Length: 612
Image (cartoon, rainbow, N blue to C red; front, side, top):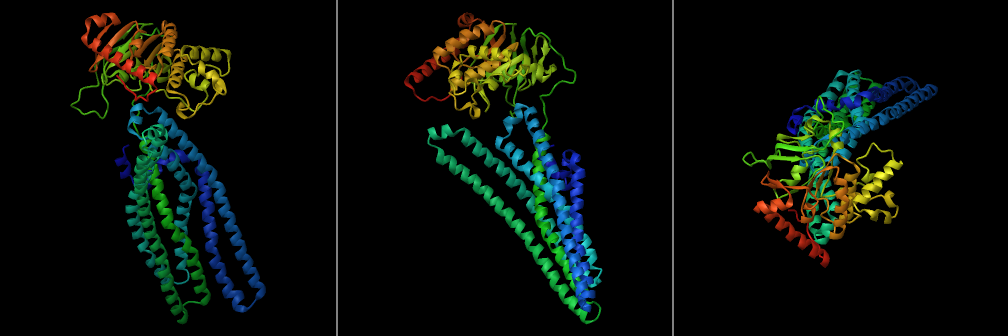
């Protein structure tokens, strides 16, 4: 469901979408509402008892009976307090359970949704939904929903009881309060839009904070901290203005919620004095009437706050279900095929790919790629910027699906395999090495859930992978392989992060290994050592290696030249040098760039990332 379709739902129907999450705890939520209702009914009973006390003991001067009446009111108050305690006891734990289930489901959904979804969505928007919106729904279920239902019922029952003493007083109170419904209607129109703007702007603000924290080195290096602060300040000011508009809307409804009951009190007081003077109403009845109206004061005033809470919860629900309703196009097949002993033949057959937001007149980014990787073969993929190299590497593991043609593993379309099996057979290492705030051991063995933690086999696989990646530096870390890496591994150098990412791919021991320039941050000497070790690993593994250096090309048995979204030549390095002028141009560009990078390292000059 899109945002627009969600907005067309009425508020009750939109909030009803939470029912599957709340259904397991509905009995306790219901008991909480019943407890709150009993508390309100006990409060409404106090004016009735007060009427009897005024008519009886106070009128007759019976002091003993007055004490009994006071005791009855005290017991009613204690019982009301007990019901309020019960209401909190019934609802708090279930509400946190719903919050837990929502968070689990939301996180699981984020993990299952395709990369294309995460390309479109800001991380701050997702984070604000995960934390702020779900917490708001927990508070609404535990507090807002229960009190809204109970207070509306209390107002209905209390208003009906007002007619018990005199129809005129009840009518005045009811008619005077009627404009509140119109005020509530106008409030919903304005506040609902503001609530959505506020929560979306809070998500944008969270995105700005996250980007600034992750990019703090860049901001400091270029002295752009002040610029980032100015941009953040503008966003924060926009959010502040929206919050002020929300506060004005709430203030407007509160104005009427306070004013109209006061007007009703004044009119009823005048009418009550007149009726008493005319002998149509007793003094005790007038006192009881105003005691009852006073009890109704809080439920009536709370409606504005609870109504705004309701609209905030509705907006939070809409925002959550925008994610839940996103179509997941990368899913397991209905009738999956299994490959028990993969040989590692990877084939691209007329593979096409274009991004969803690409203009219709633009050609496909991958425009009919035909490429065969034989079992155990290492294929280097080279091409100029924009030729589609990195995009091609995302297709075998179904980070993206082809929009035409197919990719096969041992003759089986990768879309016919379950995602779990496919990603067990095909491993990947990215140029931009991403590590997690876990130990070195956990990061390297991330793809080996079959290993028993701490076992000899797990230790052997770990050490072998670290050896191939020349990641011996981990033994110099404070706790060795058990050292906890900082957020995204930024406490390590770029080369160290790449070596651990490469070790992670090697440790997975896939039949096919896809490497997107995994050695770009290594110095020449370390790269040579890694390449020597990789030759042994790749001797039995099919590998597709995106090459940004001539030295990486030397790893390969054959080279594929990607040009304008198509493979235009395949052969050994020497063959392509002899037969393809475009290949010679690409290799020449790689050599020039590699020479520049080496010179920059020797001079210790900062250098921007360049991709060819």
